[in-house]
Structure formats: C-alpha cells, structure tokens
Image (cartoon, rainbow, N blue to C red; front, side, top):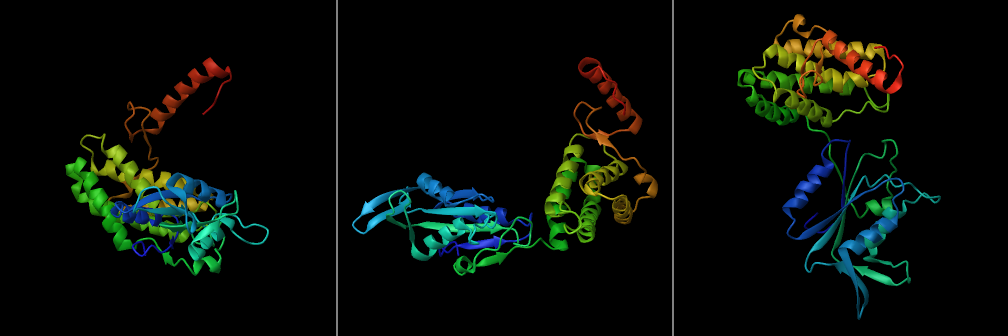
Length: 328
C-alpha cells in the first residue's frame, strides 16, 4: 500500500508497535518520500493539515488551476496521523479533520479557505495509527472515509515471540555479569509469565489505569539493566531479589485494593520460585533497592538504613525550610 500510495490505518491496543512498525518501514523508503508526523488530539481540526501543507508543499498556478505539490521534485510527502480517531465529533457527528482527509483522497484536492479556489493535491499520501474505538476518548471513524483506507489490526506478540524478544535483551544484559549467564532464560520466562497473569487478571474495566502492554516488560528490562551495569560480582540471589523488586514497583504498586496486592505478590513469588528453583527465604520482605545510599548507583538496601537516611534528610529540610517537625 505504501508503494501504491494508498492511505491505510494501523489499529491495535496501546504498546503493540503500530507507530514503530510504520516508522521502520518508512525509514527503508526514505529516498522517495518525506515524512510529516502529526499527533492528533480531541481538538485537532483541518487547520493543522493546512499548516502542515504550507511547511512541506508549495502551491503553484497552472493552466489547469492551482496545484499543491511537495517542495522537492519527484518526492512524496507522507502525512502520518497518529491517534487519528481522537478528534472530537462536531454537532453533526462529523470528525472534520477526517472528512477533510477523505475529501482530498476522494476528489484529489480541496477548496482553499482564503479565496475559495480549488487546489489540486499531488504526491501527498495519508497514513494513520490508532487504538480501537472502544477505548476511552476514541470515536469510530466514518465509513465514508474507511472505504478509502483499509484498517490493519496489530495485536501484541504471542508468548513465544515475547520470550524470544526479551530473551535476546536479557541474555545480552547478563553479559555484564558472566557468572549469571545461566539465569537469562529463567528470568525471561518469569517476566513474560507474570506479565501475562497480571494482564489477564486486571483489566481496564476494573480500573482505568489497569493497562498492560509490552511496554511494561520494556520498563522492567530497562530497570534491571540500570542496576546490573553498576554492580560488581552480582550473586544469583541479588538478581532474583532485583527482578522481584522491579515487578513490585511496576506492577503491584499500581493496584488499588489490598487483596489485589496480595494476589499479585503471591503470583510473582510462585513464578520466580518455579523458574529459578529458589527458596522462599530468598524472597523475604522487604525487598528494597535505592540509589540514595550508594552515590547514584541502584543497589539493594536495608529498610533501617534507608529509614535513617530519609530521617536525616527530613531533619535538614524542616530545620532549614519549614520549622515544622516531619514524622516518617
């Protein structure tokens, strides 16, 4: 469709890689096109597209009327509309910016607002990406537009694909700790299993912020790397506690009810003990990691040490700033 210069839309849940997929494909075709990336919102209107055309295109008068074409000869301008189903509908139930794109696609041009002259559009292609219209704040796009733009569903990778993707990351990360290279696969399996269990148990119908995508796995992997790269001679027990700590921070801290916390903590303990073959003692609480006590490096700390440090900082703060005792 890109080569045929047809408009199309990638739709899928947040974090499924819609934008990344389009950007990667267009980068491979960068010699023949120029990308104009737009982020739509509820207030987006046709004025945004007109300003974009002014930046990337020129309007010339020809014997056949006014023609708008890209500034660079022989190149196409690809207008990428991210979150294209966010614009709010007007009183007639119309998303004005979407109908403007439909008019350009169907009739090959538009009437210029300044003088009501018809302007023919050449070498401009529209692409879009959006979440499903059932998500909060989204609006179903008109069938009059969608008959010109095929919709491709992009879902999350399956469990085996996730294990392959994050297994590659984790094995590369553990090269920083050669003595732990055997932990790459157990760590990956534990991460993917816990993510899947949480995403099945907690949904956005329960709480609006219960959204789970592979972005959580990426945050988990990134946090592990930040800690591992500064540790010397890391032990397997330290790695396991670090993995659990980041799971608690990323997944459990967002949960609202006590019983949800308990369920999630029990799940991560069971999964980690099964994958790593460790004992319950390794997962004793509290599990705390901080950069406060180590000069900026993310390392494991004891609760009393961290408490004493925070108390000392609070004492300095209220003595110098508030003159009011703060209690922790």
